[in-house]
Length: 54
View 1 (cartoon, helix red, strand yellow):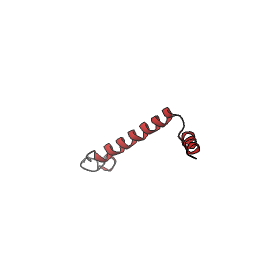
View 2 (tube, helix red, strand yellow; view 1 turned 30 degrees about the horizontal axis):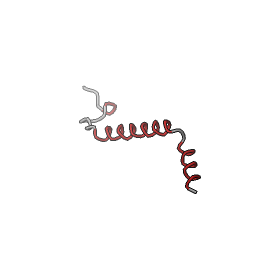
View 3 (cartoon, one colour; view 1 turned 30 degrees about the vertical axis):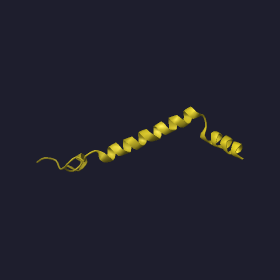
View 4 (cartoon, one colour; view 1 turned 45 degrees about the vertical axis):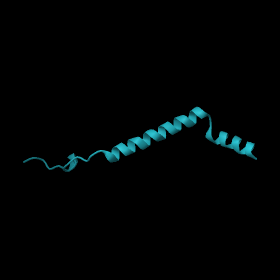
C-alpha cells in the first residue's frame, strides 16, 4: 500500500526539477502580489481621468 501511494505521488508530482521550478514560479507570483499590495498609492486621480489644464 505504502509503495503504491509513493509511486502515485511521484507520478503526479513529475520530475523533482519540474516540481522545484513550479514552486519557484509560485513563490515569485506570491512575492509580486505582495509587492503590489504593499506599494503606496499615487495621490490624485489616475492620468486618464485628469482634467486638461485651461
